[in-house]
Length: 226
Image 1: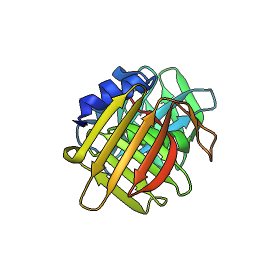
Image 2 (image 1 turned 135 degrees about the vertical axis):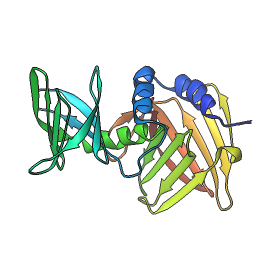
Image 3 (image 1 turned 90 degrees about the horizontal axis):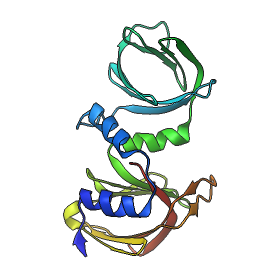
């Protein structure tokens, strides 16, 4: 067993077990947002009628738009309804779960938030590196350099956090094991690079996840967010 560090997660767990998205793009997104995570920020993944999609991170008085080849920071401006953000060349206007984006030479209309994708993007932009979910009861596992291990179960009613100083890990083949303790709980986590299907949504994931919290077992699926 060795002490869990952020570098270990990225280079050993996430790189060995998974095929990740563009890591340079994720670093760019996180650097754009800065080191401080706005606890009131909202994240949306808008899919538009012209097959264009983008991620929007709405904070107080500004919005970050992560486009396919560009990152925009737009300031909030007055709007008759909904929320409107703009600079000299771009306008982003959203009302609830719908939006419109105007860029030089093109307008993207009928943009609707994909709530399922937005949850995962929100976690990624908050600094989470690996996320897993399971059902009956619903639970979420997050591994990050900020909170290290966070396990939420009972449909969000119970939260169990474990600091890096109390976490150890070991890797063998395509399986990584974690063991952690805090003042009240003990958790064991097994991540295996085998394909996994969510029992509720049928969504496919590259990692099978087994969690043992105080001898109670939880099974689910997960993937890297970088």
